[in-house]
Image 1 (cartoon, rainbow, N blue to C red):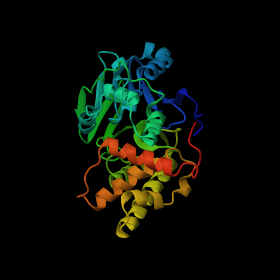
Image 2: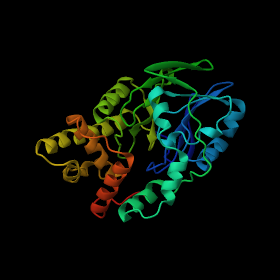
Image 3: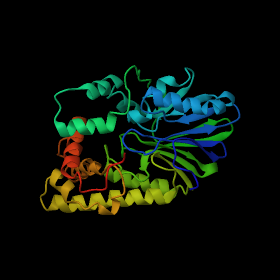
Length: 323
């Protein structure tokens, strides 16, 4: 795509910018900026205040001319909204109604407490340190969205028209993309992981449909929630993974394997250069729950324990983890 995958702000042209955070693994999310003559819209904040402040500082020369008048949280995961309190007081914050409701379910204080928790089983402790260790949740006050919607919402940023399209539940219960038809560009949030393993917290089958929707938009530039700027080939690659997991999980389900055994059984060697392979444990369970809706909904703690155990079992048998 001609956009280097390096940390910081990258100009995409036509008043569009991507803020990238390699390596795109747990918590290292991207954001975006849409600038017009006298205002701008920010797509997502970052996981903690230090990271969000550094991003806004780098954007400062642009924001002096085009201050942030609005922001969009593409979904409820905290690495896309925990920096909201640093937005200008008058900025409107948009999100889907489902994302706004989900956002209130995990507080910064709870994540801070999880980092400091003692007595945790060793595999889970290692995994929590991997996923959350680099980030500082102390002092964060969650600023929730001020405007919510369902389905589609058209917005204007100066003279530029854009549309917010709700495609969840998929990665989360309320995923939204930001589509700029005039620039053939989409900020996808976490409906796209480029070069990293996706994780279906909500619905694997709906995510496949979301991939089809994104590709039908015909955008030439896609800014993923994690990973480098890409095009439709990035969506096609991720869709191939999701379909592979869905189909293999169905075979394992028919054979009577439990979700943990199925996650061990499914061959993901075609995606061995992707980070976060342990997410297969969550994705298989999502597929199983669609095959058998009577299966109980797991808690977040149970899902992290499944990933931690998968990671421990497969340590040394997969591509080395990202540094």
